[in-house]
Image 1 (tube, rainbow, N blue to C red):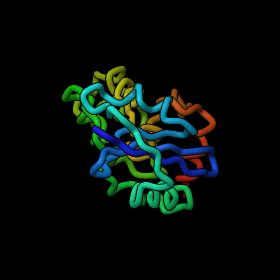
Image 2 (image 1 turned 135 degrees about the vertical axis):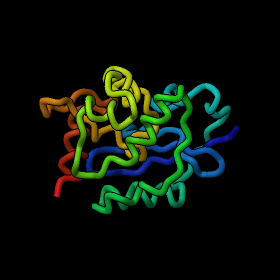
Image 3 (image 1 turned 90 degrees about the vertical axis):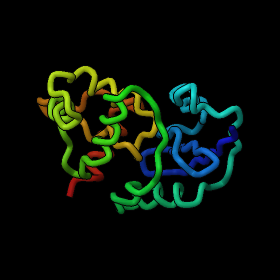
Image 4 (image 1 turned 45 degrees about the horizontal axis):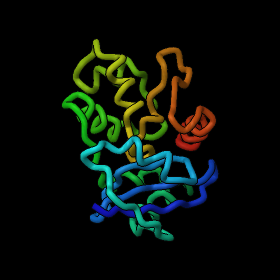
Amino acid sequence: MTAYSSTVDTPVGPFTTVVAGDGAVLASGWTPTIDDLLPVIARSLRPAEVRGRPELGAVTAAVRAYHDGELSAVDGIEVRQTSGEFIRRAWDVLRTVPPGKPTSYTDFAALAGQPDAVRAAAGACARNAAALFVPCHRVIRSDGSLGGFRWGLPVKRWLLDHETP
């Protein structure tokens, strides 16, 4: 399969997206290179070839709009990830966490249907290849501290501040 990538400048650094031929996001994050993204794509979805493009239509428009303040711009973008049943459900739940209303890892586990699976819920965040489109940055520790984030805590802090009214 051939996929396509594009990098755009954002206020918090370069943001790169890798999409399948049909436009579904396979991976994304605040990095200038696809080398940071390809390893997090599930093997069954990993493209054989990635061709760079200046932009990716609706995906690039959504990334720009989000960073410009239209926080719901990324909501309708299709994402393609695969994993076990709980992780897939957790990723779906992440897409329902509203901007400006971060949830704790404990509450996230409960929302995903397994209140005792806090570590698994944190693992769903860590395994999320489609940052921003599946907003794992909206999950924080119960004490209000940030927890982890693949793209760095300064990026997570910027995103949470950006989403706070």
